[in-house]
Image: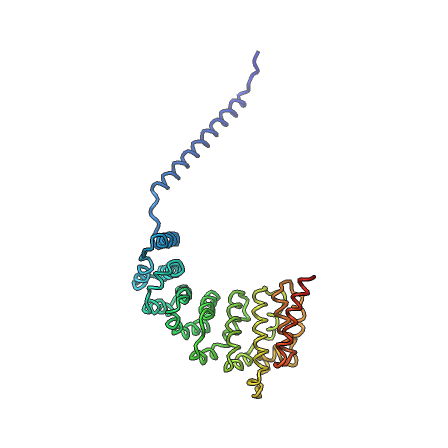
Length: 339
């Protein structure tokens, strides 16, 4: 005699069967939708990054000219909204990096066209234009034409407080030699560069201090840098809590300033610095730089340790025996490896 199944048991079985049927039907419908979507998919836009990469590969394979970069540059002359202009510039930048032959075939007029975008009212367009100019700066024949826009770049950096714009502009400036005609403008923007260095945006800080380190090697700009106003907590930049990349660049900057102020040419003049100047923060009687440097000698990153030692040596060794003192770095590295 068979077991009796309660009505509730039959109901439970029916629910399970119905659930499985619905689940299987849903999966089948989903499969059909995906398949239909793949079949009806529209072609990728020729301005998309994926298409540009494909064009680059095809050009390398067949040695032909895709014409993509020229098409984008021509379209830049048309009237677009800010978003469209930014996207066109972004894709031009990608093309310059990917399609080197087509980029080299561009003209100075193309550089001027991209440079004119620096006057756009939208900051995102300015940023994309700066990135495009940096991409073109890798091609030697365009460098002088790009340098003609440096005064405008410095103006943007010093008048607009936008971290992404600062990064893009400073990367461009750091990628090419700075012509001498730029020095008067550099003096005017020195306070802005120092403010960017003391901001809380690491990438912008690193780019700013790299530029300042380069300028510190210019005899006619050294005093302007040393006399620049800094915040009372400037030496916080030398704390071990800072990123290793920023610490290293700040230490290079300090070394170059120390070396510059100790040259016979600079010491021949009696300079006067304001109380809140960079000179007083680093080299003044009340400076705590030495304490910060000693703490960095045991930093986890070796390049920071070595650079801190170099600054200490530059502060203690006279200029004429600097070469002899530098031998301690090789011994330091040897002993560290031996340990």
